[in-house]
Image (cartoon, rainbow, N blue to C red; front, side, top):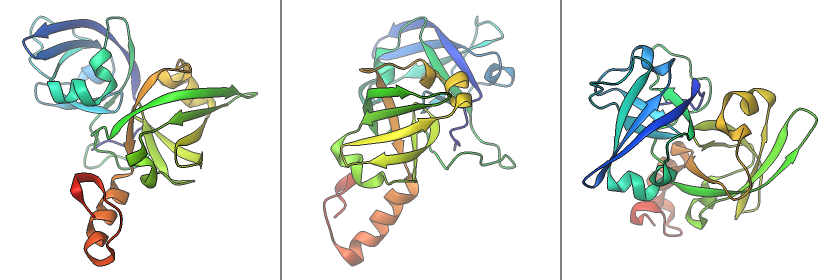
Length: 210
């Protein structure tokens, strides 16, 4: 699992198509220090597995993206030179500084607007309709792997306030209106919905839950 506390902003330095799989080479000096074959690293909030890094530099690692990942996340448009948020999986004795995240992207959203403040930015995103019920004011959401608090929501959009540290230490400081981002809603809300569905009934949910 992950927490949404980005360790560093890395760079995609290689994109190679191998059949239906896309192999990414990512440069990230911090997360590469102990990255080994089979380890999990969140790239823009998407949990990926470190593949064989034979021939890679010490500050780089390789990842394999299958069609499901390419279809359901923004990484389908990954290009050389792109900056990405990186976080290693949380160790058992680590601090849960953000919120519980799986690195399983629920959908993609679109940055609609950003309003710069004196030191912070207010940013509004559109999200898929099927995810709106999991997003609540003062709740948690992951945007490109960054744990954020929802400042406001109207069902079709949500707004977050980005503090100076987030603007400086993640890619969210670089995002512009029209950019696509990965979204992961609160997994606890999804489990509560599924467990309660059999007792309360209600609207159709994810995975066919009613």
